[in-house]
Image 1 (cartoon, rainbow, N blue to C red):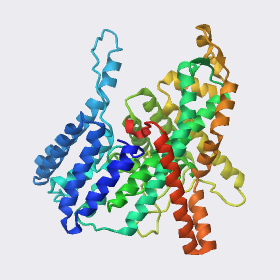
Image 2 (cartoon, rainbow, N blue to C red):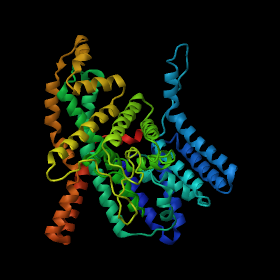
Image 3 (cartoon, helix red, strand yellow):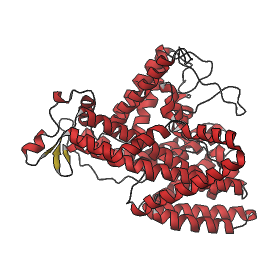
Image 4 (tube, one colour):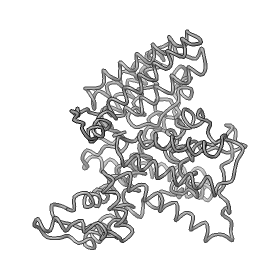
Length: 529
């Protein structure tokens, strides 16, 4: 079941909210138990084979962590290691064992039977949430949650169960124990859900049609059953389309998850902050998938020493984090290459262009580390500035830097999207106008029969069909809407602003629902992780 499906919007969500709020505030334990059951049903609906696997993991993490918290010294450390090893082993078996055996089988003299292991949806997300809880309790003795319902609800709550954001137990523990109905928070959550729904079904799904067409040509040399060639123009169209798709797909899901949490009385942290508007690679990764980067920063990067070590060790710490980040996304050489790609670029930026700061900020965002600023009420610190920052007389340099960020992001997106390293290499050569070095994509298909669809023809067709989503997506990737809202509120006053905002939300909901009803099954990209 996905948030943008008819079943979820018209059946699961209204029924769940109705029953949830029929239970009085004073019976919060019953409300939590119902929400846990609803979350397990939500997971069972899409993954009936693995719901008992997840329930077993929930029970073991609760029970063993409670046992660990009652011990000290070596016993506590041993239990902690056992829990972490168990969680990681579960993740390894279902996500990485097939990949590992496949590569071992390629070694001389090896003949290994490779099992076909299905990947439970969202296993990386709920495993990382469980690990977060276990590690935090280990670090703070006496903090284990005694209620199995509360721990299970934290790990499996349906708004963030499948694709995040990864929530820290400390951020929601008090909200699980104490919360009341808040009409304003509920209304805000509805609006946030509508915005995320629009991002997903209007922009991301539409851009996906163009991206899938181009990457399909790259992979098979065909389009709609006929031979096709990947030209430079077509490759760039596909790269831009996928960059728009993945941003609005994942940020849309995050908006919907945060909105659903608000409808249920929870306040989740933001997970995206207009990453395409960044003026450095470090800042880009502080604005993209913030919760994942925060996790790697707090549980891997800083325990290894962070940046408060020698330069060589700092680079090693960055390398480990980026390799793990690549592997987290999937068991594939392309994801490892993607991690190495971002490590190299972030390392160069940190070594030669970033001014030093007195506070450890994380590994270039740590694949999304939490952005921090000094002087704010929540204790965050001021973001770093790249040397020769933007000023009124350096507009050209500012523009060039942003173009560089977008270019780097597009190249990274291609590596991320391609199914193999050879495909990624051919695609990038096509973007550079060097596809002739590896041969024409469609030549073999033409030899086998069928008319050739030229790259120019397909490029013009895709631009004619999808130019509007490319334009809207590119504009909305920058903080245009918040700026326009602030301007309207200043010019018209809060009253008229609220009217315009309300009408806009209704129109967006109607348009989004029309896309949902007429569209087919289109899962979120991050479901596979």
